Length: 594
Image (cartoon, rainbow, N blue to C red):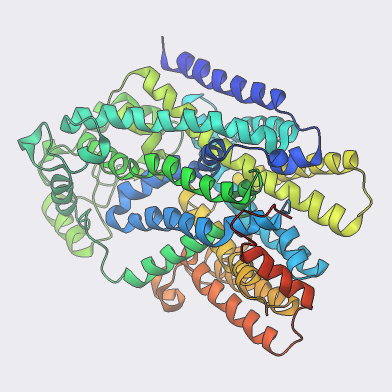
C-alpha cells in the first residue's frame, strides 16, 4: 500500500476515534464542560495531562532543536520537566483545594477583586494564544507533507477537528480524547526511535543507543562521530555548549520552568480530580508519562541529524565526490522540497549540495579558497526532523504514517487544552463572573462554545504567520505565563499579606515588560519588519533572548507586587484566614475541597 493511502487510513482512524470519544463524553453541565465533573482518576488524568503538555513543540520541534543545537537545546528538557516539579509541589494541590473552575476565578476570589480577575483573563488569553500558534504550525507541517495539502489547507483541517471535539465535549470530552491521543503519540514517537537505534547502533533502546557505538563506519561512538563530522563542517561540537551562552541558557531554563508551572491549561487539569491528594498523584503520573518521550528525544535528535548529514555529505570535507549531486538526491528529499520546508540553492554552480557553517568566517573563507564553495546551500526547517526521520532512515510506510498521526495527536491535544482555557476564561470569568452573573447554565454553556469557536478562528489566523519554529513560539508563551501568572499564584498561596493592589500591579508589570521586550525584537503580532531592534545577541538586554525574558519579567512582577502591597492596606481578615486554610491541612484526615 502506498504511503499516502496508508497515511489517510491511519490518520482517519485516529480522527474518528477522537470524534467518537467526544460524542460519548459530551458535556451536559458547566461542571462537566469546565472541569470534567471533578471525577477523573489521577492515573487517567496524568495521561491526559501528559498529552495536553506534550504539544507539537515536544513531539515535532524539540528533537529538531536538539538536532541542530546539540547540548544547548538541553535547556528545553530541563525547563519543561523541571517546571512540573514546581507545579506538583507548590501549586497543584493548593489550587485544587481552593476548588474553583479556572485560574482567573482563583485570582479574583483570592484578591477580592473583579479587576484582578479581568487582568488574569487578559494574561491567560495572551499566553494561551501565543502557545496555540506553535500547535497550528505543527498541524500545518504534518498535513503539508503527508496528506499532500498546502500548509494553509492543513491548518484549516486541524482547526475543524479541534473545533468539533472541543466544542462538543468541553473538558470532559477533551480529557478522554487526550488519553487516546497520548497512546497514539507515544507509540508514534518511540517506535521509529527504536527502529533507527537498532539500525545505527544495534541497541533497541534509543536512550542507550545514544551512547552506543555505531554498527558501521568504523564502529566509533555515535556522539563522538557526530562531534567530529560537525567540526569538519565548521560547526560547534554537538556535545559542548556554545561559548558565552551560559547566562542566557540559565534564564531560559528558569523561564520555561516557572512558565510551565504558570500555564493555565495545565493547571486546570488538576481541577478535574476528585480530591486534593489526587492532584499530587496526577502530577507524578504525568511526569512518568512525559519522561518516556523526553528521555527518547535526545536520541531522536542526534540520530536524525546524523542521518541527514550522512545523506547529503557522506565523505570527507573538500572531496568533490563527498558532496551529493542534487540530481541524485533521494526521494525523501524531493518530497520535503515540495512543502517548502527543505530547500537547496546552487550558489557555486557545481550541481552538488554543500552543507556547512558559513557563519564561521574562518572556515567559510577556507572552504571558498580551497573548494570554491560560495556559502551553505541547504536550508532545513528544524520542525521537519522528527517527521522526516523515518523517511530518511528508509523505515516502512506504516511507521511513517504512525508518526504523522502522532504529530497531529500532539498538536491537537494541546491546542484543545489551550482553547478550552481561553473559552472558560471568556465564558466563566468574563461573561458569568463580570458582565452577566445571573446567566443560566444553558446560556453559559452556549457562551463557552461560542467563545471556543472564536478562539479557534483567531488561533488559526495567527498560525498562518508563525514567528519561528514551534518550540521557539511556545517558549515565548512560557515567558508570558512566567512573567504574569506564576508569581501572582505563588504570592496568593504563600503570602497572606499580598493584597489586590499588589497582585494587579505585579501582573501588569510582568505582562507589559515581557510583551514590550518581545515586540522590540520579534515585532508586533509577529508581523515581519515591525521589530524595533534586530533579534541578535548583540542587541539583547544583558544577552537575554526574547524567549528567556520571562524569568526577568517574573522578577519584576514580584518586586512590583511586593512594593505596592507594602504601602497599601492589607487584605481583609477573612481573606488572610482563607489563605491559611488553603495552605495548611486541617487534620490528619484530608479536608474536603471548598
